[in-house]
Length: 308
Image (cartoon, rainbow, N blue to C red; front, top):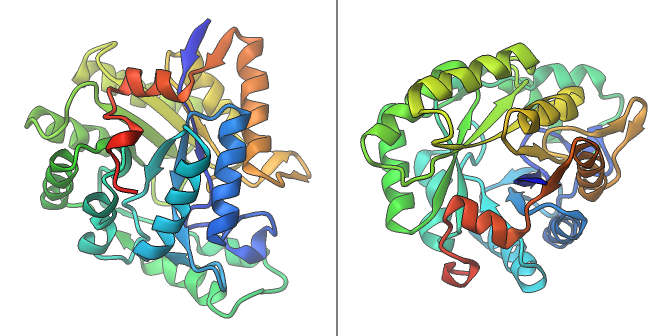
């Protein structure tokens, strides 16, 4: 069977508590969902912090530290800590998790972009917390900054701390940015890419767009010279995931990106989304890699080398 890396993004910065009662935001709940997702078959969990009182996205190091420590104490899963930190966070605040925790893996966004989540506000009938509506509406003016100087700085910090970058590609130009960073020696082999599709301001989550992105990576990096994963936001999550598998990559699922298990049926846990992806993958003869197999594929330093 072909082994693939299955990444589960647990909570993110986009989905607010008012849009789903199932998106976890307390540290103990995020960690518990990570452990359950790993037990269901995910080999990587993608971690964001949230304010435990109201669910607001947070880069607070104490909150992130509690989450990752709980996960590590109860699971062998690879822990991937975000450095996105929210579109309005400074580069310094975003990347602070790397020297602090020295994770095996951390996300690394590859280009500046508009980042809009304001259309979500039209779907909310009742708001749970006061911060939610202004947060969504303010995204009309968000610019998610990732300049070439930022890319060089963040990649150096990751390399100094032995953290593997998961290079996130929100648009086709980000592929070229990532190739620049790799070509300058900032990224160790094998480079690991995550195509993040369907965010307003980035590339749409369609199969032709994903095929184009992969062909561009093949042309720049060389076929078989990199590891690829993909996520299609919302209802395209499983279609893009399966396409990535069939083209030799891995995939990402989770409540950060998609709230629905099926039409009209909300996912109640991240583990449910993991289980569905694995059921589909096995129909095609694909099997999720274990955490240790994932460490070997990505050449990670090992969970004993982190600082949490």
